[in-house]
Length: 212
Image (cartoon, rainbow, N blue to C red):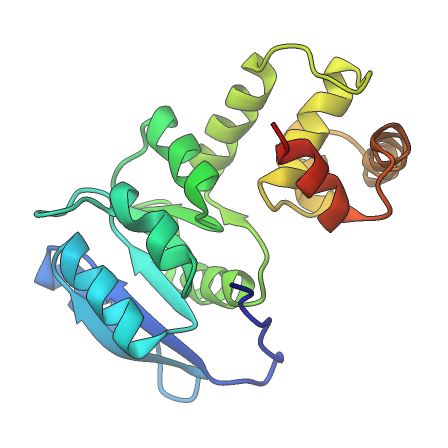
């Protein structure tokens, strides 16, 4: 299923899934009237989050990791087919971050590492189909990419790192920041990668990269 990218001025609906009612209330307070973002539902566990995602079809779902019945990680893929997923959790474990992104989450924010304005930016970015990661989550993803074995298709180690980040949904600018490279260097790597993969663009490259 393809999720349409919203127009910049389009109203964004939000489902907040967290077993802590205080956290859900704080999230509501962080979203001011007139922001173009509306909380349309709340869930206290993974089962309820999936049910409401199906019923409400929100633009974005804020999803905690540790919840009863089913944790956030176990429902990312299912919810991600309906709504763009932004993990919003206290869990900073590298493996959880990587597994969430691999399962389909577009963003990952860690409590205590963002301010209200950044939450709004993250929601809007994820609603537009762009990745948004807190610094800790970005480091976890980069560490995982660098630990990956040497790649196929004749890609160098650096090109492999770049391609894995492309597949995770990061833009060229985000990749440059994550790998501490200039934007021009990343653009050159991307062009070389597409040539080696025989891909005409990002979508085709990702499909080829994920092919067994």
